[in-house]
Image 1: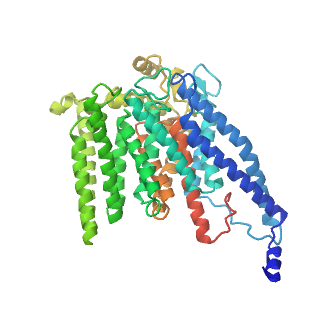
Image 2: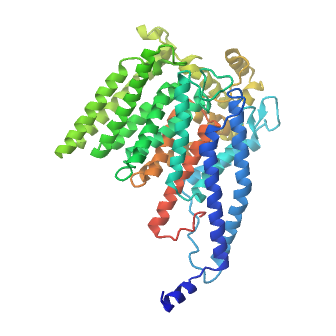
Length: 559
């Protein structure tokens, strides 16, 4: 090295405060990465000697303990780092001071939701501990109160600002998810590699209740599917692609057999979304049909298993039987192979015609939309005038009563009653974090309490089995606006960024799957902690891409 070069390098030596910033930043990077591994690997696989007996409570307590420990270490370091960065801004002669803090539209909605959660807690009349729980920790055994909501939001802001992108960490998450999903598929056929107390049809894998499990795997399966659909793991990385296909196959097989219909509905809608994103590109359309072939294949495999061992499956419902016991998987495979062949032939001949595939997609979505409208009309008519739609009147799906939609009829009715009971301020900020059950069972509305207890007995109705409705009840209009805005803007921004960044797009697709599933489901520690982590990962990708586009030095991760 020339003397002049050594002199320039010596002159570029960072100031002590800058060096301190770098050290703290590296330490924060390590701590955040460790916390990510706890959330993505340890939490899903965490079990105790009691098995399923107290699985939900134990998962909540472990999540709370791990997250509070992470906060105690990470937050003070982050504060010191911010202070050092602030000092750097005002010291003369220091380069690379970073840009001004940037808030995205998703950040703004997250802040609105944060404000709503705090205001809801301050307004509620259920802060004192009762036999059912309180609003700080939440309903006993469920624990989605103020503290957990703050931890969810903390995950989002922590990872969106502090996570240094490492795609291989997503690979570790996928491997852990593969173990969870393989256990789920085996459990559904009565095979328990792990001995679990209180094992039964309503519990599955290392997650617990099938609704918890469904929300968790539909989110991860959709994100993995997007990553493969984008063609990641192609030339030179065939083993990554093959591993991803294997994991996706396990996830799809477990998803179609797990027993919660909301996951099948989400899978159907996400398949339609993938088609819309594929229809103008020959390569993506080919991968779309390959994904359909994989889905059809796992349904056929399960069909064979169920035909050979008819009594093996421990739990099934109408959608599971349709996908794994009827002729439908054969039809699915035939259509998938035909679609794949037509796309491949057009690619080989250089005559791929997006217009034809676009018209097919528009027709399919229009037909689906028309079917939904017709169903809604028939449901309303038959509910008001029972027996007026002929033979369809005998089907429970066409009568909105307490049992409609696996009891969604009564849970949605109870939830809307909770909201309508409130005064204007109550409607704005809700009854309190995780306080729907506290409100119902406190007897503030005796008729509501009687209706719920007559239907569910001694069981507590902790949520409305519709996430957005539950947020409306607990955190009011302000909370619903913040939460819905958080999810919708993230989905739109991340999927748009997915045109160039596969990980951002995968995050968007995972959040979309979670949101669709939770039309009929609810927040809980496993899937909601995962989706807030995915929100943070997606936002970190967008911020990183923005810094790269600006040619930033990259030390502005907390901005």
